[in-house]
Amino acid sequence: MNAALKKLIAITILSCPVALMQAQSAFSDTPDPLAGIPGLRKISQPIPHRHSRDIGKGFVGIGFETLDRDTFDPSKTFDLLGESGVKYARCQTGWMKCEKKVGKYDFAWLDEVVDGLSAQGIETWFSVSFGHPHYTPCAQYDSLLAVAAAKGEIAPGRPRGYVGESPYYHGEEAMKGWFRYVRALAKHFKGRVTVWEVWNEPEGFWLYQAQRAGTLYGVEKAAHDFADFVRVTADEIHKVIPDALISIDLCHTGSAWRPALAEAGIADVIDIFNYHVYNRTPEENLRMSLDQTKALFVRHDGKPVRIWQGESGYPTGPALEAYGKLGEYGQAKFIARRLMMDAACGAEMSSIFSVTDFLSYYPDGSDQYYGVINGRENKPKPGYYTMQLLASLLEDIEPAPENFIRFTTPKTQRTMTSLLAYNAIETVSLKKKGIPVLAFWQKEHLDLNAHPLKGMLQVVTGVSSKFTVPIIIDPVRRTVWDASALKRMYPHGVETFQPLFCVDYPLILTDLSILKLMR
Picture: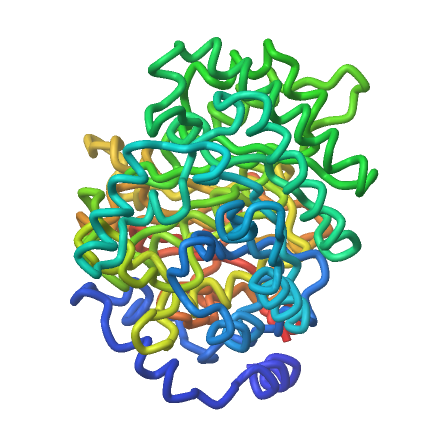
């Protein structure tokens, strides 16, 4: 080992806190894909990371949703989030909670969020959404609230926040009330909140009398109505904050809402489009969906609409969805795939849902387990540490299409060997301040714990971005390995690393020098 390598290893080894030791304890009995490979040597654990205050151009965000329904105590999460390195937090504002008395606004609970996160170096962006029982009365929601009150129980989450009930379909007075609320909110947070998202997931939560407008009126009309609503809401925000950035989101990678919104001229209203995805695999149809968005959402002034991933997560416990069986290990794998895939597709930010488990969220009073923090114990889960590692690694990240990466069969197994599994491997080429960051993984359903594929990793990088000391980072087990002894040169200048295993979460090939940038 040369002197420079010894010095860099010495400065990157950190003490391992108890919480991290606990977080490393369970990987569903799956083998470590890098342990035992001849010539591969573990050199550091844990990997350095940076506080949110020290992150400049951050990539990773966190979900602060449902506070309008009092699902968690935000103050308990601030310090942990600062240590995580996330740079952005999405918060639903909740008209019903802000205007408990008609005409009187109380934003103290939002002040706590915005100022508490800001003190940690985290920027809050708002999702301005949902109805109000005075302006948008809904018989179904009122009935559910009344039943819960009579039983002394907590009402289900949706009626607690009048989720999705749109003032647009409740007449002129409802819209006037909405405008007053939006202007008051913008005035109060001017200078503190820059990005303003209008509504949440209109395919599912653009409602009239708790029914989807897309079902009641058809997608084309509902989308045009929604576009009009976004336009007039953006006008009210801009009256107070002229340089506010306006955003919308959609929650399906493929639906008729995109072309309908494009036809309604939504691109000229918004600055940011953020997608929400809860597919069985993070990669499913994503590239095609974003290609469609970029092709359809074209502004007349030529300014491109910015792309964010605004909400996506994986539960660590029982959920309404039919997945999540791997619990905390599955969540960590999901987060690694989610963040790497979003970065590869050119998103400027990727937001993990959510900060903490939501207490008493479902109609039966049970909790929701999507948090990277255990809601009952206020302790980080393994996914928190995966997110923390990648928040530092992906700072200043950008796609690097000039590099090439593939994982293929060992040379001795190419003849009469099925290539189907190898052809389904996802490969990602990124760079951080010129240093290649290359990742590969199987796109299999997370809960299946895909069998590791043995093969070799081949890369071609630019002359100015060669590996001095190649390393492989495992973001789930949070280990780093010296891969120098695996490197071989093949004909035509192809760098080949073998043997290696490809598993169902990203393993990241990069250079040892990148650890300096993560401190």
